[in-house]
Image 1 (tube, one colour):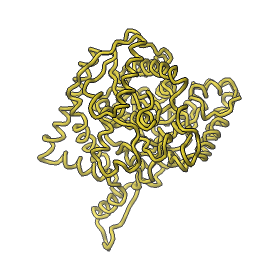
Image 2: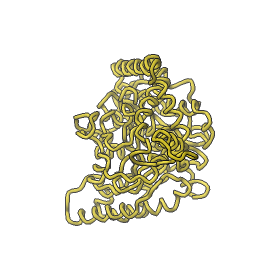
Image 3: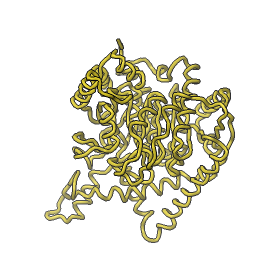
Image 4: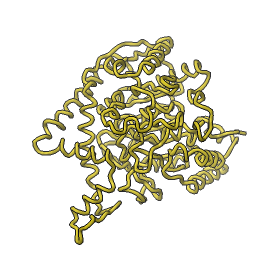
Amino acid sequence: MVSDPTRLTAAALAEALVAGELSAVEATQAHLDRIAAVDDDVHAFLQVDAEGALAAARDIDEQRAAGAPLGPLAGVPIAVKDVVATKGLTTTAGSKILEGWVPPYDATLVTRLRAAGLPILGKTNMDEFAMGSSTEHSAYGPTHNPWSLDRIPGGSGGGSAAAVAAYEAPLAIGTDTGGSIRQPASVTGTVGVKPTYGGVSRYGLIALASSLDQAGPCTRSVLDAALLQTVIGGHDPMDSTSINAPVPPVVEAARRGDVSGMRIGVIKEISGEGFAPQVRARFTESLALLEKAGAEIVEVSCPSFEKGLAAYYLILPSEASSNLAKFDAMRYGLRVAPKGVESPSAEQVMAATRDAGFGDEVKRRIILGTYALSSGYYDAYYGQAQKVRTLIARDFAAAFEQADVLVTPTAPTVAFKLGEKLDDPMAMYLNDVATIPANLAGVPGLSLPNGLAEDGLPSGFQVLAPIQADDRLYNVGAALERLLEEQWGGPLLAQAPSLDVKEGVR
């Protein structure tokens, strides 16, 4: 029998369920117990749905006992980022303006999770409307990094990454607009994947920037991420940007993990200056392992990537200002009456509500985006940013003619301390310098842990592939994961501090 289901990967947990070594109810209860034990310190969850998760688990156990055909992850519990609509469960996007809102429908990816038999443990914390790199911009308080509780877990999906890293959930759903799955994975020692844009339906995701947003897996292994992408991916007629094509063979690639003969491109513009010395050292060591395994390492140049950060922080705020206009105090969500006004107009109520309901970072980006879209400035700012976006896509296309995949460090530093960059937006934005180009071009990206850097904290290795070639991510990721674990004697998370709820998380 399994002594501690929370320490198993999703794939191993699924095998134990099929073998009858434990039930879905036992697996789900073990994770609920873990949440109860550590989440007061981690604060990965905004809402835990114990009743719903156990009911779903009982249903899976009954189906399994009856011999019904089940999916490969049936009975494996999962956490879902609070930006994804879940019928009957509060969905706030980390904002006071949506406090208490319960969607009357499920997002497509949630529908697919339920159909595949994954009990939903609850909703995870996030930067408000996915705006941030540290989960400090949540209206409900920050999430803490399980490696060190005084550190950030990344953002905007720090709650999902922290839940997986703290063994509160074997799987989680994140969303990635400029690195919000991959950067949290990097600083928490987990695996995070942004699929090809359109590879996972956006129907039911509360939009930040519609041309950039993409949901994807947060896990503890490359194979787990592949299994989860297969569940949530695929065409959805409810999403006009959904790719009408099958999910690439990601599970087969993750099981193969063979880089012999592959050309791996190191992006010259995203690997040196601005990256912490030990982050660069771990990156160089990972390249050496891949080369030893038979890959050819080549250098490629993507000169437009240097302008990616500036372009992103014009395109994203512009789309955000448009998407968030619907929070007007008239249809749903928070409504605040302006003080001292006897018969306020709709505009006054709207202004008072948005002032009270939105946090500082959301207001900052709305103002920036509205300015960039305004008459007289549209061509100078938003229009120019879209031209840079085209150049970045061209750089990717040229680079993929020279290499099968491209690689970079995922984030320039390890997890920084809570509050350290909260008053310096530019310093915070620079955390996404390596991840943003993938969103601007729509290509898929994967981050996996590649060792310990400064202060004994994890760093991440990013793999990028051409559009709809997500399987290449998993092939390279699985190969490097295996090589690193042979070197470490097991997963990186096993090197985290031993559990003491009040001092560390493990």
